[in-house]
Image 1 (cartoon, helix red, strand yellow):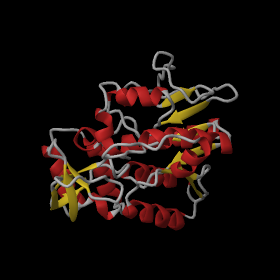
Image 2 (tube, rainbow, N blue to C red):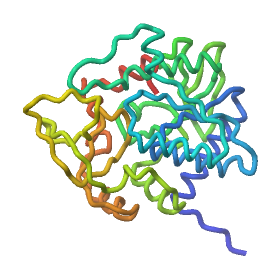
Image 3 (cartoon, one colour):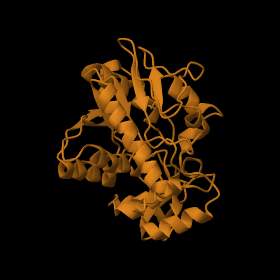
Length: 303
């Protein structure tokens, strides 16, 4: 009798399912951080494969900046209803008022850094001891340093010099009271892997990921930022209408679009095979604040 052969997507899927089951087995109050973006959508499919026909052993949690793309929020709500799983939404706007935080200023005021405060509040509110996220090592060099089980101290802070070894797929989730673990089941996936998995599994996505016509502001870098009410326009800003898509979704004031006619997942895969810049490098303005911008935010509790 022949042994079934696994391709690389099968192996990545099996690893991620193993990690999700480890989370369920090792932690009392885990949560899956769900943004409505492609990576967290893939995580929900993996969770279905790991735990169906039972319920997920964790709720879906979204930290809403108030600057999210409406298409993504609509998708988030529809998917949670379709899955029949609990969705917890907490608002950065509420955190700003409660903690008297300073609203970001400038022409493109991103609330992304303020998500940390809301996330830490949410972890404390529900006493989550593990938070599952869709970050991948290929996205950004700070994320490449991080383990799959990434321990945070009682203040939500990450110390890259105090990480635990992960040998032979053995994950150590032991924590002290007040600490929590951030878990990254698709850490070893690439952007191309994610899209090939989406294609194989026939996963529906928000329309924003595919080519569509959108009014944009042309940035000095030449990048295209979708026009929203949160951008503080100057009279000399160049406003154009272009056929674009988004490679990643985040705060609308810091996530640029890329010009593309890609109408299908296959089209996007062909785009990626020719791409020379990572998705965050091509689209996320807030990663360019400083050379160590992402690592600094992660040290302070950012996901």
